[in-house]
Image (cartoon, rainbow, N blue to C red):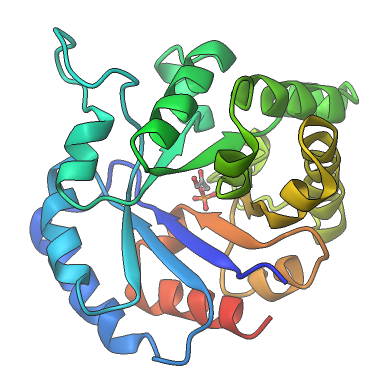
Length: 253
Ligand code: 13P
């Protein structure tokens, strides 16, 4: 049985004051008995503060991206060791917005994934098809290819601890969620690809999240599916009330 993992990707939202108020409100709402892993991925300037705020709670902190190198002349970038040195535990890699606006490719995502493992950060590896690809019946091929390329050269032990997020691009921020059945079908395909790459045991250990317009009203159905082990949430992670409701739903699976 895989433990559900609910992660909030705040993207480029909130001031520092708002981030702190959110953490205070969220930690007050989470219950000791909550069974889901809970991760917040705030904008980079708030990472260190939120790591401190999260201490003593069940919330863990993730970054939204990182550079693959440890250091160097890469203006504006953040390295895995920098994240590690402030207590960050997770990093979202290959989000479709990074692929679309910042030229991230399957190859650069693979470098980042390998670097994350090397520096003991848990990557949340994002894959997903565009609307055009879905309508062209290319979903399976596109997503399989993204998974294979992201995990190229990653060993079994590292792969077992990773998290994959299936986020159909057309469902992100649009209010349009994939049906639970469609989302599950792709998540199951991802698991088959991971079985072929590694083994049944490794593939069964990897947690696969669904992301794209997840809300308190649809999370239960999504999480009831056999191959959906959590959610990567944008909009509905910005409000402590709704995010706490998502974590609670993840704890009741
Ligand atoms: P929304 O939940 O706002 O659709 O965003 C999903 C997402 O991109 C999470 O990474």
